[in-house]
Length: 200
Image: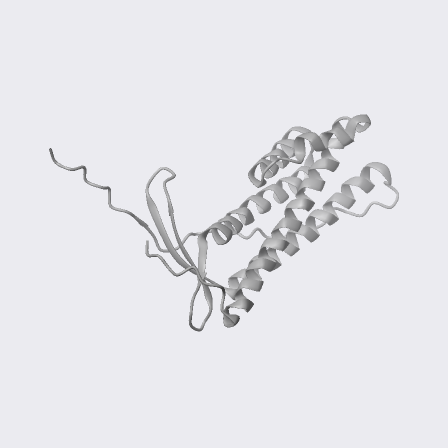
């Protein structure tokens, strides 16, 4: 992989960098809402000690949060409530793949129009791969909108779950489940040639 000069961003690169930053902020807010939902669900297990559930939830990473929601839904909830929480877990997990690819993969901004984020990375999970990709501002905007939609759904679902249990007279029906974004396809991934050991 080539080296590039460690230089400050040029002014014409700022708009792209700003959208990437907005994507990260929206993801962080989404993760916070997911954590809050899990906290609300954990409070059902032991309402007298609901504050202590933060001790176990606060350090969970994104993958652990989605897995915890999935297991909770399978073991504790039923019907549409279970489907709603499972939907959140799957949606959050799928979006996490995009977040990781963008945040950990983009290493520089294309120096000419159209401005895109250039992904140049390698992976050694199971096999040695190299990823070379370009992420457009439109793809970042799509991700930001997906995270915003997920946050809105999580907040509506959480409010419905609380009202159903504590204020059934005013509880609204569970929100409709939006379509899932689908698993990220990492384009232009090529298997690197296995190094041939030196002959003795």
